[in-house]
Length: 278
Image 1: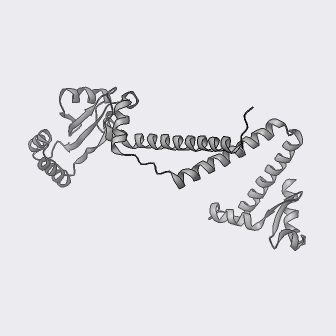
Image 2: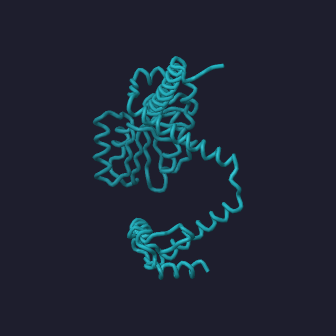
Image 3: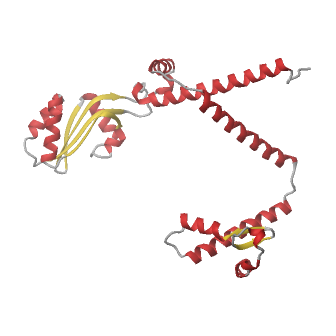
C-alpha cells in the first residue's frame, strides 16, 4: 500500500508547484513533508555505487516513509510531557555547554605537559600502573634443523651484542629463517606463545630460569632471547604509559581550566549584581 502511494507520488511529482519546492523534484510526500530526488541521489553516490539504482531508490523511499509514518503514530500516542520537554532542554543545554567549553579550551588553553610532570605523576600513582600480564623485549628466531652453522647462531643469541644481532639478521635473510626482533617494543608472553610450540606458562617459566632459551619441535629449532622481562603485578615501565599519563594530565588541566572560568564568571556576576543571594 505504501509503495503504491509512493509510486503515484513519484509519477505526479511534476505537478507540484515550482515555488513550493524551489526547483527541486519531490519523489515522495507524507503530509507536508517531502523527500527530494537530489537527496536520494546524493545518498546513492556515497553508499550505493555499483548497486541497482532503481532498487536503491525504491528501498530508501520505503524506509523513509515507514520512519515518518511510525514517528507520526508515536506522536499521536505519546503525549508531550514536561519530562520530555525537560530531557530535550537538558540535551540542548549540555550540547551548548560542551561546544562552548571546547571553544574556550581551544582558544585559551595551552596544556603544556613536561616530562617531569609525567615522571611525578608516575611515581605518585604506582598502583595505577601494575602489569596485568607478563611482557618482555627480545627476539624470536625459528630455523630449520637443516640450517647450517646453528652453533654460531646459538652463540650470537647468547652474547646479544650489536654485531651479533647484525649476524642474526643476515643469517635469517640468507637461510629463509623466521626472525622477529622486538628489542624496542614490548610483547606479551601470550603473543609470542602463539608463534611457538610452548604455552604462555611454559615460556614464562623457562625465561625466568634463563634469558635465552632453545628448543626443537617438528624439524625446527627455536631461539628466544629476552632482554627485559616484566612480570604480572610489577610496575609498567614509564615509556609504556607516558602517552596515557600525558592524556590524563591534559584532561585534568582542561577540567581545572573550565572550573576556574566558571568561578571567575560567578564572582564577576556577584560583584556586578547579576546574581542576587537572599
